[in-house]
Length: 304
Image (tube, rainbow, N blue to C red; front, side, top):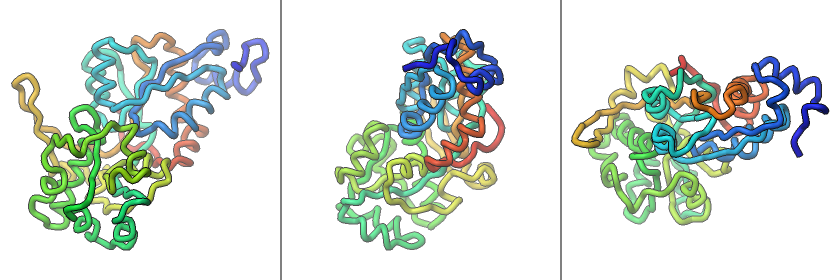
């Protein structure tokens, strides 16, 4: 049941005042489009906590971030808030004049997650140093990832494999594991990938530590030279990884930026004041506490 304005607690009224949303708007709703890897923290943590504080109902919409960006710019969906992992999807929305900037709200890094039911689970659990790369090269191992055309996480899997090949001096490692940029045998939707890992349908995947922790899956921590979580290594090391894509006859080379989640209240938000309040909540002490509880690091670096 929503909190009515007439019975609104003083603390909620103060929160709304601090985030520039009038009490008369509290008994309302917003739609938040977010990177699908954030499903657990959004559904179980952020959305219910924001509603409890404000009475504003949050309708979550989790999908691959780049796919969401294109849906937003095509006006196929009209959310109030967009949350992306990495800057690229935010820049797509900005280029369409639908965002005036995005603020960093959380951070994460890449880890090697493996299925607890996998026949390779014991080997991964005992792995040290570069051992995980040898296990991934086993011909019977089932590796899963998301679509790099629509999901930044899918791109970051390929970046991580490239950096691992450079760091451990393994020629052709990325191609050997991924089998090419677009490999239908390995590609699954973002919301289903970790569930397949949990159920034993695949053996291993590279993914965001925040999402892997939220699903309580076992994982291997990767060195900062590989995990794409250190802003200090962006220019000196991470830029060595790249992806080449061709769209409409135009070839584009992209490089990874550190793994940071950004949030923006969209310019065409149906409920703009509530959208701004939600973004403010994400960066508040209460919001940051929830992120930490679900395995996220603080957001680092400048806004987009």
